[in-house]
Image (cartoon, rainbow, N blue to C red; front, side, top):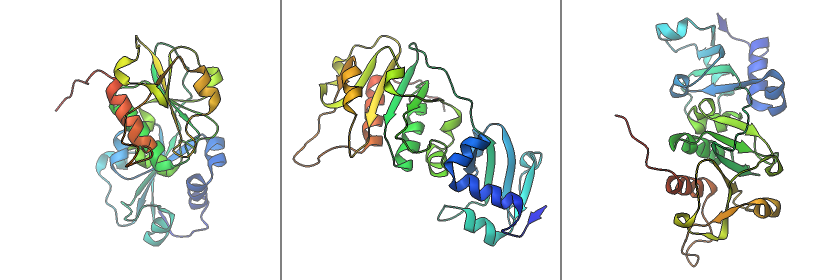
Length: 243
């Protein structure tokens, strides 16, 4: 089936899922764009392909629709659209456990940074990511794309710091060096936004604080995603890599 009108009900639904966080929550759905993310996508409801795309046989088995090129490209937020989008059921909320390893994000608003942190957390073997009310929607298309599909591989929890117990480690300018941290089992690494850092309440509830030494006469601070990546690397045992 080829969808050729911007007023088609499926096109309208897709457009709203791409732009409206409240609607995504209501529909319990998210949109993935691009071929690479498909290898991680779960519970695909509908696959949408641009009319010039030839779908491989395995993707033709999914419920799919073709979209006229001008309409598809107008829907896409990519500079060079790959010609494929999938609407998937969003992962079910996970339960918190003190025994697991998480990263907690406080009021992070940049979708690219959030997606990069999700991808990095998955790469370093964390169990999940926790985000509070001040964060951008973790299922926004730009977040999903930047995560490269890792939104499907991590436990994702919406929670406030007051909901959490256990070993909470706050990234703070006046924290200890990473090698001096006490880690035995699960932990929550809390990262704040670039502009505001961590809220005072989070710093107060932290059982430990950690910092990364930088040349402050050359750079005021690190990007949140960069800081998260460095800290996660330092806190983890080197992963066993597979070819």
